[in-house]
Length: 159
Image 1: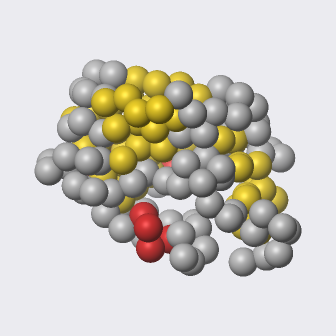
Image 2: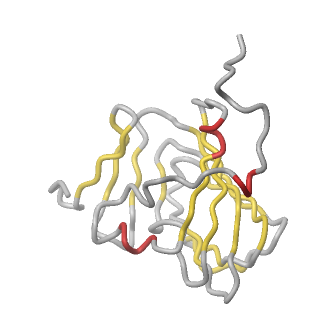
C-alpha cells in the first residue's frame, strides 16, 4: 500500500538538509563545517540503504577518513572536483566519476574539497547491522548499536 505522506519524486537539489550537521562527537563534529547532507533515501522511507546528496563548500571534508567493517559505500560526483583520499593516496575526481568502498577492505577513505567552488556528490551505503568504523588518522572508533552510532576513543573510553 502506498504511503501518501511520502513524495513520489523530488528535485534532489531542493531536498531538505539534515538538521544535525554531524554524528561525530567533538572535537570531530566541528571539523565537518561546510558539509551539507540532504538525506534523499529517507524522504521515500528507504530502510535497507541510505542515499545522501552531499555538498562540500571550499575547504570542507566529507567525513573523517574511515573504513567500515560491514557497510559497502559508493559515491558518484555530480559537480565540482573533490579529492578522494584512500590508503593509496589522493585522486582528483570530476563530475561523472564514481568510487566504491567494499565492506571489510580496511581501505580508509574520505573526500576533501580543495578547490574554490562547491563540490556535490551522491553517497550510497547499506545499513548492515553490526557495522563498525575505524579511523586511522584520529583517536576515535565507532560501532552501530540499535541503529545509532556509538563513539569511543581507541582505548575504549567513551566520548
